[in-house]
Image (tube, rainbow, N blue to C red; front, side):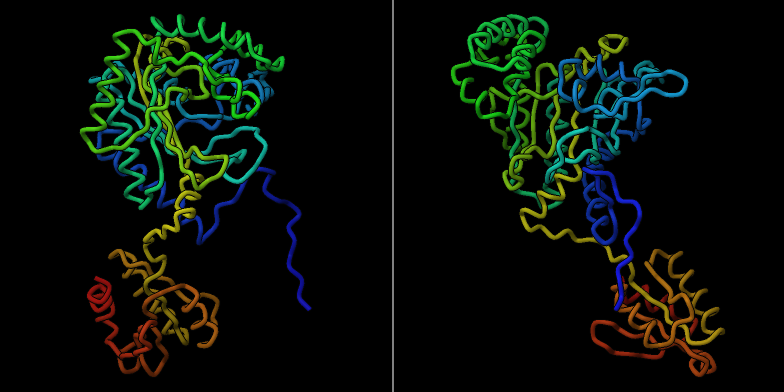
Length: 425
């Protein structure tokens, strides 16, 4: 009777390990989201996994759930107050300002990133305490075409993966001219509702966040709430209409959602969300918007900017919900099975040559017999197996087996690379 080995340690609650073969899907999703960005002038940026607590308190907003309840904050031995990053925009903008990228040449500074983020939330399917995102930020320009570009690129990325049943929700949150008037009207309305103490406190600090409350008891009472679109100034109306026109011209379908607010304090004007109805309650697969005041909030100059972040984990779940099978490259195309020491040396050299010309190749390690090595070849998923023993090498050949048809042919040792290049295209 065999017993499974149980490790002393497990992944922390609300987190996950990415392991083969599933991890290949996540890599493919990251690559698909990044590809249109790289093709549109966005350069890669990587920031630390932790930052000053104050960066997120100022940028994301002290009244948000992220800062009040969900941030992993800690004090270092040197007395610094740090937090694991709960989102990417504040970190990217901080790095761009610190490196003076906004002074280096043409604006906007266009950046993309990929990484892990951390929030202490109640774990459920699609919502983890450690999650992966790919994001993009265009810093230092106020232009509706830039807002539209980012939405188009995200739409392009999702469609390149074969995703179809997602929706784009679009709204405008106004600016510092018109939002205060709306804020006051919304506060008046909300103060007349039956809300708990925490929500009432939020009404005073950031009433737009109450519109984002997912509880049915709150949503029921929001019928008839004043809508921001009715308070937009002429400049914000014109800006938003231009974003809409540009998206329509590019054939990108979207839904106007006058109640859409993002959960972070820094958003202004354009705000959008990508949702997928196959994911249950955690339907948002990504989102973003314009954040014209964030640079000043964290001590920088006025730099109007726009960006988004798309969840890799949720995109994978959305693909699964639609039954989309990604066309992943074979991890192994050729598997070598040596029988004897001389064959090990010859085939190891050939496998190395195949890898150098870009053919995915693996080798039977551990001196296994033919039966065990062929089992490994089968498990590898390789299309072809190279088998060689002493008699083969004495004749200057190896056996090339097609694992699909079962057909086996002898080919010259010096013809291996050319033959497999020809067969694998």
